[in-house]
Length: 401
Ligand code: ADP
Ligand code: MG
Image 1: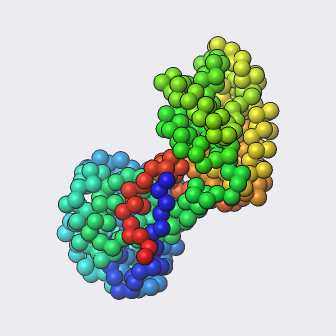
Image 2: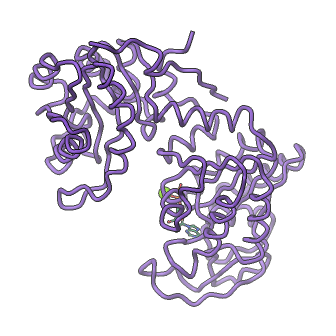
Image 3: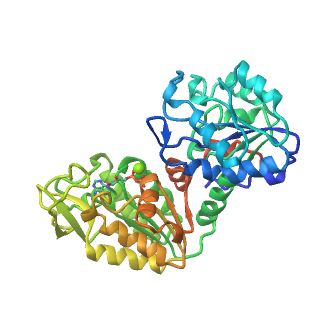
């Protein structure tokens, strides 16, 4: 398991230094307007700290998937404008990422000033982690700060490569992620319960192997559950299923038993004839025992009995990690299982950690976010963390002495 003990911005001298800060400003946009500035707001503590200490702050980020081309709609111009408003100072946007304008603007920065480089993914070299781009980024500054947890599982020029050429530390966002999730995984207060759900079955099944060495109880819901039910020889109708992973699930069930880890699977399932279309359409459902999902029906939520069982397990835990909704929560009729689990986490005294974009959105939409200890800012990254994989964007940072 990757345990991190990384230097943070508070461990290094920043006054008077040009500091390159990799943020996650990949905000949702509609018609050129930012629809949620949450990611910008979350980056402010690190930026404000650096500015208050007299650093010269050079911000950078990706937005969207421009694939190495300059694509106007993925310009960071709206982000620069919003940052200027939030910080109360002008944050100038460079016309390029490491070109003449970026160099000139960076060279002219004064203490307590900030600028933003244009989208790092306008440069084809970014996602290839091309050392020539990493070096050009490094040449703009004297210190590198990574505060973009959402891309920490990617080795790109601005998320990892640049650390080959500069002293490198983490910002507050990454510091918090590795502090809370690192503790939960390396030295959890027990009982430690993990809850897995959602639809990315293939990605998420591989997390289980590592989680089984950590947790006391593993709870499976959402689209993840049916491959396990199939592994137990049960019919799953037209539910989401990864046939290539049935043997793996059987292996995991055996491993859990051998290690004394409890795996909880749905005992009842809410089924319907078809997936709702549109997703929030009215839908006719029935609840069946999980051992008898009819051949022409699909499971779309955990049933009431299962929800009560899962909520009970979560309430009695001291540490809970949750990734993936229990059902198609976008539909009010199919959100009950997810609400029950979110409510249980909110009511629990445990350290509660939620990862995954849709799980985080569910907690927020359903109004439970403030009762959760930590909602991770990175879906894929938090999953790879749970999986015990090394995150290149964190591994590249300097260790504390
Ligand atoms: P996260 O973003 O939290 O990591 P995922 O992206 O893996 O979660 O999955 C979220 C999606 O899973 C939601 O859109 C939800 O509708 C879907 N989902 C949950 N349960 C089921 C199910 N039984 N069948 C199909 N889709 C499901
Ligand atoms: Mg998702």
